[in-house]
Image 1 (spheres, one colour):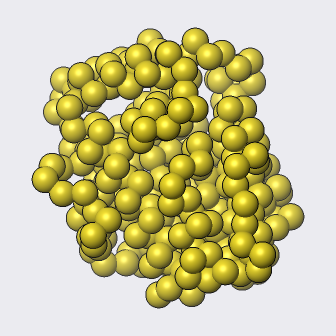
Image 2 (image 1 turned 180 degrees about the horizontal axis):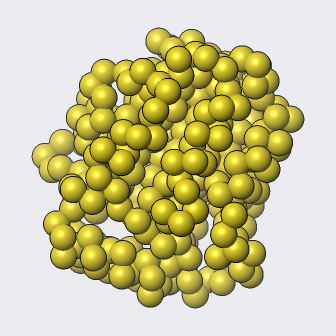
Image 3 (image 1 turned 120 degrees about the horizontal axis):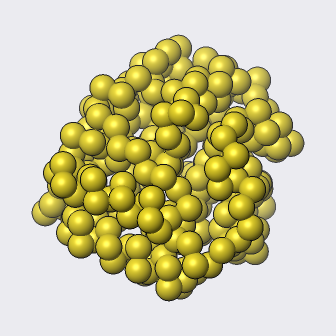
Length: 267
């Protein structure tokens, strides 16, 4: 595991993707550095606010599919971010009140707000754990206190894998997570697409992450994103832009997002 930024002391002067996301969704749990970095990101690509809303809507549609059509009752939401409307457990427990959800993040603001604000249905259960995606073993150990890994689990990695550089082997991390869950489990993810963002905008986004953010953003192309789903069968329509994945009334329209997304069922 890379030592970069996992053990850094909390610094409100350094932007964090989760708090930037919170700001762009209209939340209040962010700092001046987050707002400044978000403004730079929007300047680099004006479709950023649309993409953020589309990403949140994709999560909701994916969780509804998993709980209703997939029959999933256990969720491992990694890189969960600061709680807002339509959190994974709220969507899942509306369909299946006995759903169990483990949220994972490593930013202290995110974890503190998650533990303070999230409440489960009486029949279900939730937990918020402090862990880094680059240490899947630690995530699985902690999540195993609530989740039964002999039964199917839905792993959600929504807008988080592009914060993992190639040197930290993001495909290997996802493989380790999938290896820990049985056949019939699911993987849902979204990822900044290097082939969906104009070259200059992509360079500027990656530059903003180097200058101002705790994470170092690495965009990837559609084929690289599809590789995360090795060993799974993709749910139609496969790897598409956020707003193209099983759109319904929650799917923002009128623009194009710059994130790929997909949902796959482990064989």
